[in-house]
Length: 596
Ligand code: ADP
Image 1 (cartoon, rainbow, N blue to C red):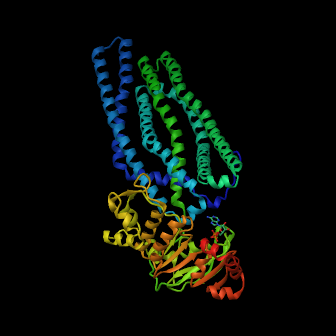
Image 2 (image 1 turned 90 degrees about the horizontal axis):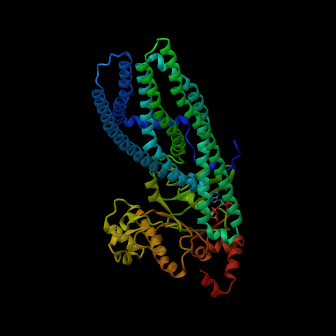
Image 3 (image 1 turned 180 degrees about the vertical axis):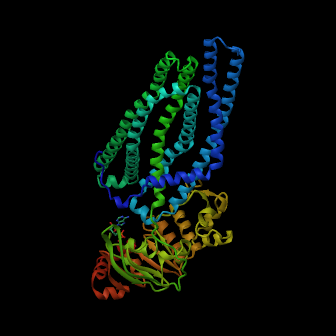
């Protein structure tokens, strides 16, 4: 196949193996065995009624040929009409059942999928990027929905009808029906050829579209960066590459279809011709009746429809299977932690020889040890890219370490149940998402059992009670996208109120207020200090006055802590921190106060 762009494969979200996909599909079928049997039974009945026509016609022809016809044509016609009506009614019932079943199965798949996505380890999502995940949530789920709702029922019905029609042809004229075999080799070989190649083709296609979606989204999301760095050309080239890749993948599967469809088409026209010629020969030798030939040829004409449907939906099934493989693949992501149910003995957090790598083989932290003293303020300073945020996330238990341990009260953070972890330490970032839902829902995320009084107290603690009570429906006001508008400062206050509710003893603060405008920031500073009081705080400091006010300062350089001590000790020490302080403090006093 054509060359594919090389990416860091270890970072990709996994795709399930055919065996896993089969197991998943079998499991689904098994869970819905009852309704599935009813649906199939209805279809079998409907198909059986549809098969009576050629059979009766064959008998009629023979009657006429032999001159022994005893059945009146009008009675025969009435019987036929009765069969057709019965078939129509049964088909309608069967299709209805099949569609309802499809919806149920699809709803279940979607729920399972969401549960799996939410259970994904954050470290994996960060590594793989969100593009692939979003593509699986949208494109693949859509493809899967078509398969489950339409392809699977259609295939089952077409298959049943094909088998029954063949059976009927054999009963009507066993010898004549043998002529139908001419179509089989072509159908078999063509389908085998296709199926062998289709899975890879469609997986490639889906992956190519996922990557295209991802890079376009990224360009749009990072528009300002793209403009600022004059990267438009680079991004356009990247998108063009992605489009070329998707085009190549699309051409590949189109080629597969363009070979397979005509072959299949041929293979169900051949039996009509085959049985007619073969039948004529049999009749001339006295081995079959004209009526038998008529009936079998009619069956062969009739069988073209279900086989045709089978063939075209089988293709859709390939698309669906590829999507299912990508959707089920989500469940194959190994857990990055295993809660042992241990309870920490104490509130002191300690990092011991911690190493971490985003990309295999490239450590960004090189053996960091650090002991937080309960109740202290520790500021982390250092150049950008030194590893401050990474260390912060490890101290908050977001990422597991690659080597070394981060513990609270002698229990590794990653051994804690997630809700337990949240009561020990929480990471506070500038990302403060307001979810679609009521104010109450948004706050209760942190404490599902909190009473309204507790929610109000939390809002009050972060200075947000006033505006929250002034909302049109108070705590019942729907906020989030499409709901009552919430400003960035208010969103940050909601995030802070969640922390008050979760009530962890330690907070890791990553640039908590640096992006807000200064007036909002000063207001938030008050909310924030209310949240910080009485807790151990690790602050990733972007302004040195945070460091000056802290109990201790850790200077992080190149994935290591190069200095650790109080502001005064470090200034005395006369190394990196002293130099930083000097350059910052050396400025005119007025400017430095303004900066802070
Ligand atoms: P700081 O907070 O001190 O600016 P970071 O902890 O953000 O530093 O980054 C430390 C190193 O890890 C940098 O080299 C950065 O490029 C890398 N890094 C950070 N986040 C990721 C990520 N999601 N994937 C890959 N590398 C990352």
